Image 1 (cartoon, rainbow, N blue to C red):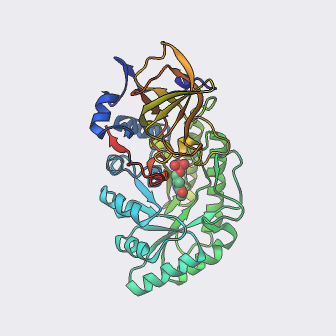
Image 2 (cartoon, rainbow, N blue to C red; image 1 turned 180 degrees about the vertical axis):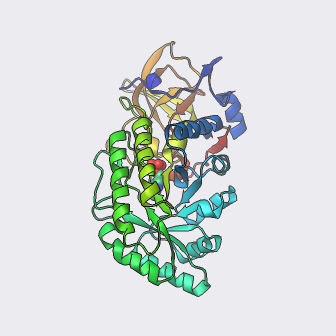
Image 3 (cartoon, rainbow, N blue to C red; image 1 turned 90 degrees about the horizontal axis):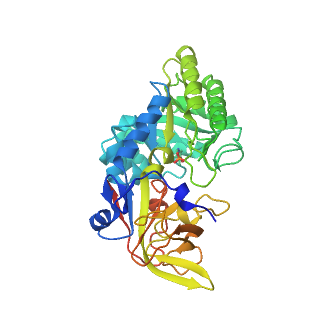
Length: 408
Ligand SMILES: *Cc1c(COP(=O)(O)O)cnc(C)c1O
């Protein structure tokens, strides 16, 4: 059992309701056309980017990884705040272009890029983060057919792994990226086939709260890039070393300390000035930019007691928010921070489990948490829901309607 109130985010509670963008939950619910809904706080996203830039060296490029949350209003809001966006499908590419991001500032990663997606990306002239030898060949042929030389960076699967990262992406056999040891041959191929080589892309992990391990990963990626650059057909202009910055979800987790990362990147940029003066150092972040700015809000439909255990049955669940159910990237299920959005914390409290309307025991939003005593009609709010929420969920499972979504 955890104290969900203590774990909650810092959204203010005023006149009997949690507020997002100054608005109480009943107003937001009305705007959304009812519950459940996702709401993202525009000011929080802006402030997050500002604070991040203040902690990191000037001149470092900050990209947004669209897969964390591709909600169109959010993309439009972020477009002028970041230096570029990274997409991983033709759909994300279209959404990003529609949000007003310049093609020059878009990169396209992901294994299994299909020819129609590649055609559209080539027409737009975005940067391809190439994931394999086969993809490099298909891209080269597409370039020859269309008479347009694709812009490419090689996504490298490093020959190391960062141990403390929440989600490990590098090292060993991986579907992502080109094994570091085969990169020299593909760099030669890139030159021979008339592709426009721009640089390297790395993505050594995600949801990392340990600054020292992020620093280590960045330095090892930079060392690897330095070695590989010797075989590159032209000078490196793009050096995307990924991100992996995590946010705290669970009791005992603390926010990432940006200071050592900022100092390390400043040193790296200083070194690049002489070693690779044309290289623009880039990091790409998804979750870190938007995760804490979003809430998922649902309403209690039933309060039932089964053999002494209280269940709050709500109108939302894993079909909208798979991650909160513990089935997206978690090894051991833990509760996301939840609270009752219209009950102050100082009244009567009880231990409850919050479950959704789906007929599966997986549809569990909170397992035995202490919350203010809630009843039918009350709001249950799931914090830290701005990233990997709706679009990372099995929306069609059991045929419930989709939730509302808004940026306020
Ligand atoms: C998923 C992904 C990201 C974003 O990861 P976050 O943990 O949301 O920051 C960035 N780059 C690539 C290549 C990814 O696949």
